[in-house]
Image (cartoon, rainbow, N blue to C red; front, side, top):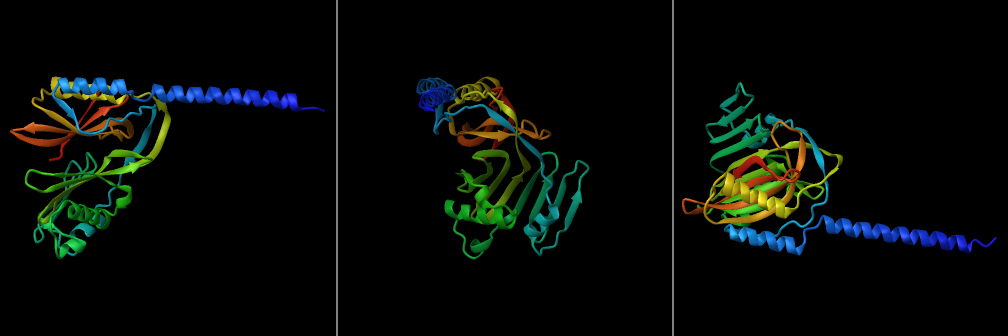
Length: 304
C-alpha cells in the first residue's frame, strides 16, 4: 500500500500548523513589546516635564502571574547571637505591638524587629567591621560591597548569590548605601530587601525585610507597558505630590511587590529609583507603580 500521499498531507498540515504558531508567536511578541515609537514618545513627554531618564526602559510587558508569599518567621534569637556575638544584651523586651528591641550598651549595638512590616533594623554606634575589614578597612565602593556581603552571609545567614547587589549609592557625606534584593526566576522581590549603610567606621545601620516566597499562582493577567507606568509616575510626582524641579530616573525594573504589608499575594510592579532635589541637594527615593492597574502603590522610601 502506497502511503506517500497520506504522509505528504500530514507533512503539509504540520507545516501549516507550524507556520500559524510562528505567526501567532511573532504577533504576541509585537503586541507585548514596547516599540521604538512608544519609547521615543514617552521620552519626549518626560523631557517636557523636566524628567530625565538615565536608565533603559523595560520593553517586555507580557501577561504575568501573581506570586504567593507568606509571613517569614524570623528567628530573632539566632540573629541576635550572630549580631551581638558574646556581648551582653542589656535590653531585651517585646512591645505591645509585637516589636522586639535588643541592645547592648557595651558595644553600642541595637537590633529592633518591626512586627507590622516584618523587618529588622540593626544600628551600630561607632560602626561594625567584620572579616578582613576588621583589621584594616579603607572605605571604598568595593570595600563596602565586600563588607556588606560578609554581613549578609555571617549575620543574616543569607546566600549573597541569591541576593545580588542592586545599587551602591554614594551619599552627600561620602558614605555608601547598598541595596540587595532576592531574585526569583529573574525577577526582583522588592519585599525581600537588605539596605546597608557603610561609613569609614564600617556598617552603621542595616535594614532587613523578608517574606517567604511560595511560587507563582493563578493564570497570567495583562500588565501595563513601561511607558504607561512612566506616565503614572509622572502624574504622581508632579500632580499628586507636587514635586518641583528637575527629576532623574536612575533605575526602572519590573519586579514583584506586596501592595500592602498585610497581603500575601505579590503582584507585578514597576520599581523606580528617582533622584529628587531637596534644599539644593539630590536625594534618591524608591517608588512602586502597580503594573496591573497602573496606579501608585502607597510606598516610597528615601535611600540617600
